[in-house]
Amino acid sequence: MRYRYRHVVTLDETNVVGNVYFAHYLHWQGHCRERFLADYAPSVLRSVQSGELALVTLSCRMDYYAECFALDEVEVLMKLVERGSHRIVMSFEFLRDGRQVVARGGQTVACLVRTEAGLVPTTELPGELAAALAGFAV
Image (cartoon, rainbow, N blue to C red; front, side, top):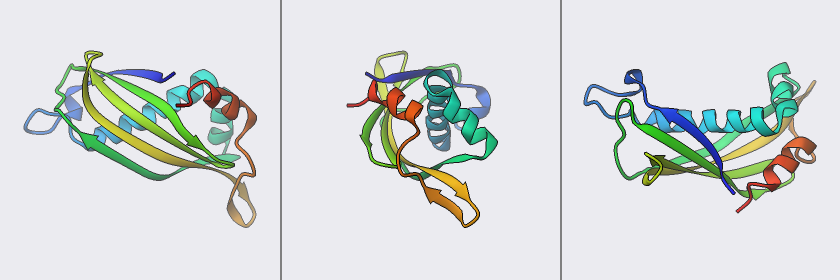
């Protein structure tokens, strides 16, 4: 199963040529991730907002296949590729009008807790997050 986030491209997300500036796809990955947390793991989102937990992006990538333009409807599909004790690897697929693949990407995120010594990896994923991710594994 894949988590779906829908987005309508705005004019400010396009460049002088009229197509979507490449960095916005990475921005939309973040929006998708945050909506997933809001929908399926709200306590994790609250822990991030309070500063108790940090979700740190370790790596991200994008491959582009077609251009998007203002007012295009883009659907971002996210799924879990791999999970470890404190790391999550996700893949993203970007569809225009629900059918044309315009880009694919991925992210690796680490779950860290704040201590007096600084950020330290968690020993395991927060329970609510682990349960939510189980339904979105490849």
